[in-house]
Amino acid sequence: MHCVICGKEFQPWGVSGFDTCKECFFKQREGIFWTGIPKGKRLKVLKSLEEAQDIFSDMWSAYIWGGVGVGKTTLAVNGLFWWRVEQFFKESFANEYLFLQRGSLYSSLHIEYTIRSNLLSVENWIDELTKRELIVLDDFGSGSEAVRSDYIVDFWHTVIDEREKERIPTIITSNLSLEQLRDVFGETIPSRIVGLVEDRIYHKEGEDYRLKGGEV
Ligand SMILES: [Zn+2]
Image 1 (cartoon, rainbow, N blue to C red):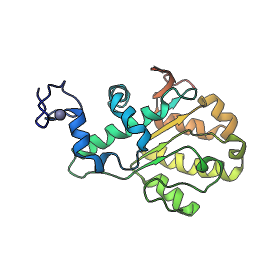
Image 2: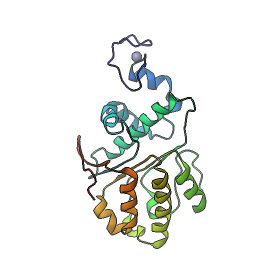
Image 3: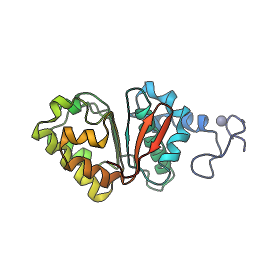
Image 4: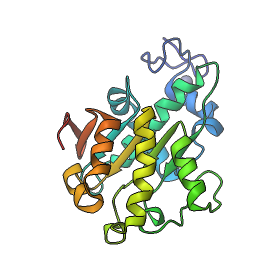
């Protein structure tokens, strides 16, 4: 197949019927697909879309864990990316997603809201995090020294419980295994996460990822 924009030959990708190469597709729709995705992540996203397509081919929730710098966030962003591509081809283009970066959220509830960058009340945050059609929780469970408070645990319990009930797409990355997450949050949140992502628990190590089906 040849790209209708640049003329380059390309392998079929994404949703069938694409008549442009990947680069042209995203370049053309920059405003739609890159919104809320950190600038520094964009190049990596394009480079490793295939890996994510593999993981997120039939389900949009996953728990991706592993050490620092192994590409967990990139994988999560790519999942978000594919979701948006899929949405783009639906009649109603769902665009209600949220990418929560590591940082303030997990140690306090002053959350950097990457879409409108305004601060919301806790109630509003719970609402946002439960209603969004897809959320990415990046580096979940970090800042664990502060996370232990009942308040924070309740907050996340509410959010994850709601999403689990409705099986709403949720991509979570963490430095912690679900077992280690238990030490931070107690039993219920990790077990709700398993309910939410089913067997999509990946241990990411460098370029590789391993499916750790159902293991907690
Ligand atoms: Zn092209």
